[in-house]
Image (tube, rainbow, N blue to C red):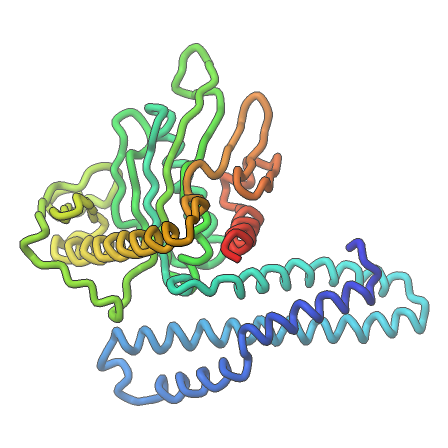
Length: 367
């Protein structure tokens, strides 16, 4: 770190204090105690949806509280270690302090970013749809590469994912895919990834080895909750069933279990083919459709507010990141200017710095 150890400790302590105030640790402890009491009720699991909500929220709050408390404890330990190192003029201990401060700086920065996720839907799980755009077969391949990148990112963070639908392209790659991220704050975190992603590389599908530019779009929406109360009349939905295609279990591909729902008034189409049961696929597709209608309503309301404010910066989710694999290696965000030359790591899901920069950038444009 550029600062002297004591200055660095003071700066980290001040940032962590702000985080502790924003998160309101005492309120978290009260809520945890209440949830623990609910979780101990013998018939809790008679209502599985409620039980899942209670235990999921409890687990999340306990982890968040432990994370902050642990950071404060580690910072206090560094203060003690530094005092001992200075009193004994121990160079090895001072070096250990420097190493610990570098780690703590990263950890405090990560948890500080979480406090910026205070939008009305930020705490929710996410639904992500990736679509190939301009670029033919390269774009379809690029869409599949992005799908892998996000699934790997979620895997690295221990987030559960569920792929609802994959539409495979004829030659290679995918036309589109939709998957859910089952983790608190998944929407707030990943919503900054929405927009068009541009890839420049030597096409593996061009026998002349020419450079190709291709595009894929990423859509991120929050999962609906019971409180959203979106009622969709049956006569506004057209239901089509079909046989699942592409890689999958044998049973998935032998029956007309896949379901496609079309919302007639808006033209929104969603599909699900990950379950063997047509009823299960229909239920899942309905969840996705409700989420898309909720997002549509939210965007319409935001557009009205932006129009009243004369806000032209609201449509930040257009072309947002460039991935260049030839003639040089670089990934650069078009909004934040953050960039790296380690393209292979990014495509393997190491996109934390891009997401953190995106969240900070979004907050700065809203303030």
